[in-house]
Image (cartoon, rainbow, N blue to C red; front, side):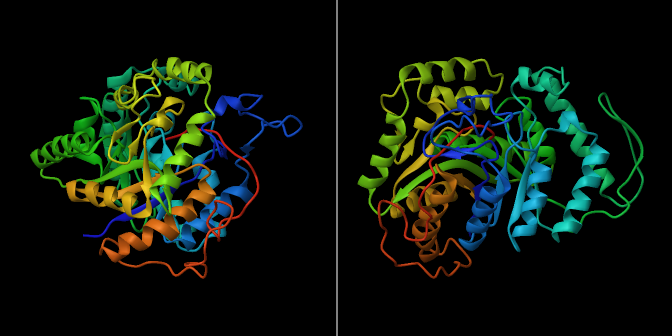
Length: 402
């Protein structure tokens, strides 16, 4: 079986460092261009279109777009970017607790017609009560997952083409319906590491998505969700969310990782760890446990580096190494049952080229990809530390999102 490769749209900002979103002088709300933070790229539509076009050219199937206060709205941003691309799909993250499930079903149906079937859905139940309350959601952690289960039941019911009634604890719907159901039905990606999340994934997810833990821990999750799904007579596929630092040599890749780490002062790391430590997300706590807030021993498994998670919430690990090394690790996760790889790197534009022109051919040579996009610049030597096809210039970044 082949793998599915996806990239990431940094709608909260991008750059060449692991600076948190709060590096914006205004907290990321207005991004005052008169007082820019050094090294930050604002997520305007022109820059995001560059990333989307690069992802499409390089053969990525879809791009994940995050959700939350510090990101641009995922639905609006991606439907705009669909006009700049032809085949690229959009894995739109959204929180079910802040929108009607029937409205979400209708939005998805409209999206599929506008984009000719390029929508995938990433359901984010939410692990930060402060963030949830900001959107008017006051349920606790476990009740949010119970609501998500009801939400997805209603969405699928509304997609059936027939009036759908539902009487639950969180939703009461009479005659829920999308007049024209989406074609095709969007695949639903879903993540969660808590006991409350597992049954929801087993019952409703098409793809269970986990953050990048060591292979043994990922296998435990796969076995857990697969077992729960089998009890319900369902089959769930699996995906993993990782960053990448891939270079022509392992030495160059680790030097890049060291540079990213070198940009972080102890105060920045301590502040980020304190903020992330308040998260209710079991997955986030598992990410923090991989490094314990320390710069020491960040290679937690071969080529798996936990440095990103020192300051970034959500996905906190990166595959670091030569193109062959990174391909080895992808092949290892694939052997465990992972089919979907949702990847990213700083900056997202340049790292898309490093991966697409370096790792993708390796995976194709191993029979793990059905097709490989032809790049007119494949084989052209790199210059100035960048892939030959990658644009030079602007500095960099912000974390945030998933």
